[in-house]
Every structure is written in structure tokens, then in C-alpha cells.
Amino acid sequence: MDKSLLSKTAAAMVAAGKGLLAADESSGTAEKRFKSVGVESTEPNRRAYRGLLFSTPGVERFISGVILFDETIRQKAETGVPFPEYLAAKGIIPGIKVDKGAKDLALCPGERVTEGLDGLRERLAEYFKLGARFAKWRAVITIGNGIPTHSCLYANAHALARYAALCQEASIVPIIEPEVLLDGDHTVERCEEVTEATLRATYAALAAYNVSFEHTILKASMVVSGKDCTRQAGADEVAERTVRVLKRTVPAAQPGVVFLSGGQSDLDATAHLNAMAAMKGLPWPLTFSYSRALQNPALKAWRGQTGNVQAAQKAFHHRARMNGLACQGKWKAELEKPSA
Ligand code: 13P
Image (cartoon, rainbow, N blue to C red; front, side):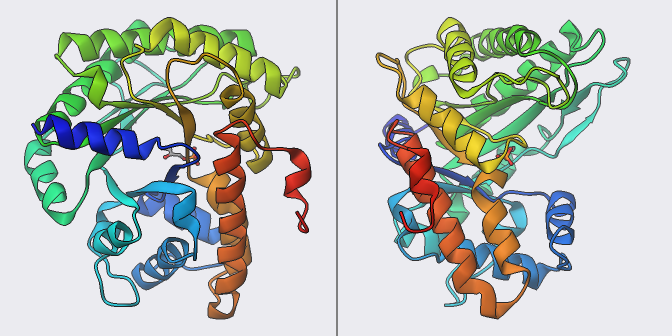
């Protein structure tokens, strides 16, 4: 466990004005995203698309690190250089998703637990050699009638803690991601309650497994109204509730908190982050670790055509810049206009 490397990596991940690009969609998710724009999800297409994102000129001003998928960390850029090396040369830290996905949790209908601990120590050692300096593990918590149960929160917290300890042992910074899903008609109050319970369980487990808070990054979901709830909380309310929950549960020793976009619109994800980052006196930097909210316009512009690469890169650069401003509380809606 190289503590100085862990500290250096964690600080660089949340450096001022920068955030993470999540490009670690599993094969199933990549297929869904590609299908939405009429592109077949083949290995060369996935390589071309992710290569387009990574090679966007100037994007390293706003992107500190990229979360890769197992396939991507082994692929090469157009130049023939492996992606991790290519990114590192641009000053972007390569990271890796190491979980094996959420599976049905036994005896808990409607709930899931994330798997992937078996053989993780060996996989982490290989990923470190391939250039990964941080990792991600995502737990999913569903809000519904009578759920989440204590069993679900406990099982996921336990897995996140065991994963985090293995990462730190391998000198890889663990991103701890307990995502409370926005699907459903639950209120924002209910989301706040569940997010708080989830984070409490997570941090209790991290402490129980001796995980060093100084060398972890939290990837949090924002406290938002359920997608189908009739009352949708506005940006200021989302910001206030999210920060309140984080302050109650996340140790100040932690180097930073990044957010997932979780199906929010691109502009909501930016506006919510901006409202939180503009708050004074926060104990940690807050920034983005978005997949959809950074990639949506780029994917739509690309549509699998080489001739659209520049337009796609422009769209990606714009969202990265907007979120780079938002994580400093400097974003304004007017900046979204094409001429701005
Ligand atoms: P979204 O921003 O699309 O939610 O993805 C982030 C992520 O990495 C989910 O694990």
C-alpha cells in the first residue's frame, strides 16, 4: 500500500475545475446506448467511440480521469498506443470498473447486491500493471414499497468495504459508489432518508474493514425526487438536501465527493452540481463523474459515422467545459447557448 501514491491520485482526481468521465459501460449498457443512435455495438465501434472521446482536443482541462471497462483498458488508440498510456500522456488518470454487476439478492425480492469480490486481489494487481490508478464499484439501491431493507444496505456496504480495502492494498484509489436509483414515484424526502441510511451503512462498513478515509473517493447519487413523482424538487432544494446528507455521513477526512448523473437530464446534472459547488464552507471538493450527462450529446452527434467525429468531440468538449465550471460554482445557464 503506497500511501503517497494513493494521496496523489485522489487529490488529482478532484483537482479544481476537473471531474471524471465514466466510460465504463458494461457490454449490455453499451449495446443499449448504441442502439439508441442506431449503431451496432461491436468491439471496433466501441473502440472508435471511446477513442473519439479520449482524443477530444483540450478535454484534459476539465477531465482528470476516465473510468474504463475491462475491454477498453486493453484496447489501443488510433496511434497504436494502449488507451491507459494514451490517457496518462494527456495528463488524464486511467481508472477501471472492477465490479461484476448487480445480481438479485437472495430472499430480498426486488433488491440487488453487487458481485465481483472473488479473485479481485489478482485482478487489481493486473489492472495496476496496465496503468489503472483508481477503481470503481457500484452498488444499486432501489426505493420501493418496503425497500430498501436493512439486509440490502448491509450486504452492499459490506461488499463495498471489502472491495475498498483490496484496492488500497493494491495502491489503487477506490471510488465507493452506492447509487440510490431515481426510478419510481417516491418523494425527495424519501430519497433523502434512504440516501442517509445508505451512506451510514457504507461508512460503518468501511470503518469496520479499516479502510482509510483519506484514500477513498465517494461517488454519490444526488438527493432528487423519484422520476415519476408529481413534485420535482428544484436545483436549490436538491443541492440543500444532498449536501445536508453528505455532511451528516461523510467524514471530512475524505479527499472528495464525485456525483453520478443517474438519468438526470444533461442540464439538470450540471445545474445541480453548480448549486452544490457554489455553497461555502464544504469540507470536501464536489465534482462530477458522469457517463450519460457528459456523453449524451456526443453519442447523438456521432451516430457511428467517421464524418461526425468532430461534431461529437465538440459536443463532448462543451459538456466537459460546462461541468468543469459547475464544479467550481461558476456555471450559468446562458453559457449553454451555442455562441457562448
Ligand atoms: P451516469 O452518470 O450515467 O449515472 O453513470 C455514472 C456511472 O458511472 C454509473 O455507475
